[in-house]
Image (cartoon, rainbow, N blue to C red; front, side, top):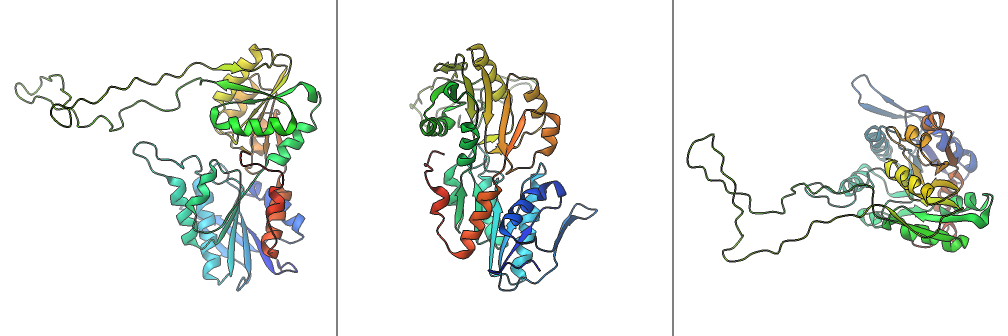
Length: 368
């Protein structure tokens, strides 16, 4: 049976064999076996989960990696958590190294905060605790009604940098202001120079009409039905004129700092669409950078990312195994993987034994 000496179970909530690699590494470090369960898709694409052993009164850890089919992985996690809840499990703890929909954690025009919705769904399904890694925004922890342990991958990424040759020629580079504090934290710890990329290659926010220009235009409907007269914008109250705001213009990408003859490392938390990374690498190359590395925790690498990386000036992309990307590595040899199963296994052990988690955050700053 999958019962450790201390009495907990570890299950994998993924139906694809490629995504169970991280779960196997974690259980090997813990000295336990994966729980006996079956997760599969029926002919009509419905997800079915069957628990093959007793979990009554036990503490359960569900390891779920997020492949390209994000929505299927979420349903697998929800259904397995609910199946364990109805099987009278005592505690159900989700180990989700990459938390999906974490980019949708802010209100965008008439959209919604999907990350908050997912947090509510997980709580309703029966989860009582979550272990994750490098949330896109640390404030996401406030969406949950139960404890969240947001681990950091920075010790493993920093170790990879320290093992790099020509340490005296390394320099950290920030892709945007959002990643500036992360790059600065890395640079201070490694005692390296820091370069900042200012501006953007393209606008990340659309200036389309979003309902802010109210009330709507009033058209004159008199006359021929096919004749359209220009609309007249009316003020909310007679005699009141709102100030006209200037349109926001983003400058082109420029480099603040010296990267000539150095190895530039672009630091971020998620690598998904790589167009901005490719454009930044070209500018760094023009400024005399010797080599260019891109380093992040979660390597989603969607769409044509492997091909764009292979054809770009980027020399190496370093990501962790929080997200399965074996197919992308076959398409692009520049992609390298750092294993973080050790810290996830240690977090599971400490949580179950009631030990402090402070050791896992030793020498880690808020900006990591």
